[in-house]
Amino acid sequence: MGRQANDANPLPNQTSYYVRPCRPSDSPQIRALFLEAFATGEGSVASVGRRRFLTQPASLIAYLLGGMGLGVGFVSGPSARGRWTGALICTAAIALFAGVRYYITREMLAFCDGVMREDLGDIGEYYRAPAMFWVAVQPKENEGEEQVIGGVGLDYSPEKDAKTAHVRRMIVSPNHRRRGIAGQLMQVLIDYADSIPTLRDLDLETSDLQPGARRMYEGLGWRVFAEERAGNFLGTVVIRQFRRTVGGA
Image: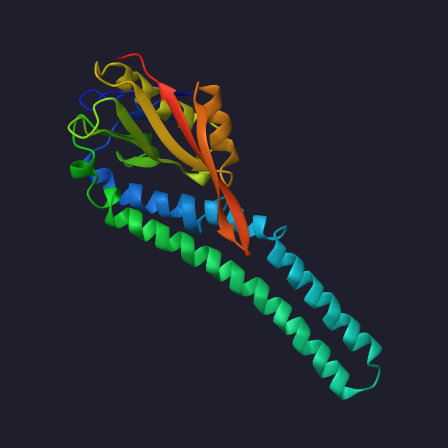
């Protein structure tokens, strides 16, 4: 189970994980975890996108090309020209699959690079109070150190908009999912937001490449207030905007 701790008095090591405010020394682990969760790890957003591609229109074209190539090679009999034509068509189908997988990975890496240049480049500065960033950490056995296994940020600038804050960078290690870590992080964030008298709404954005996130948000009282479909012939994704009223207003 997870528990909340403050930075001055973290909970003892016998808990499997706990949530506390981010420290400057956490930043390298947070950036590595974000890259793993969104682009490079098993179960990352990029890997979900690559699996999703298998049912998208471009995949149907690749399947058709592959079938045509096999068919041409089969009916051509001993004709070397026919076999070569079939092989070229099959190669085109394989190239389409490989190219799209590369494109999905490249786009997600570019997204991660933008995040590193923005808020995760200097977490302490970007999420300076009253904004906040929390991490879920797990003590490392016999090392006296902590492993960051999750994180979430509250982007709040009352001088720009005192009534609305934005939830950003909800991440959980692919190796530590389905343990309630994301829910614990979100609850800590909501409790903090409830304590801000001027704050009325929390907003966040997610997509259908993260179905588990949507279920969690709806279970914690968030509602969808806008959605849009984005993409191209390679595939589409539904982006949803969620909102939750907090108790400070």
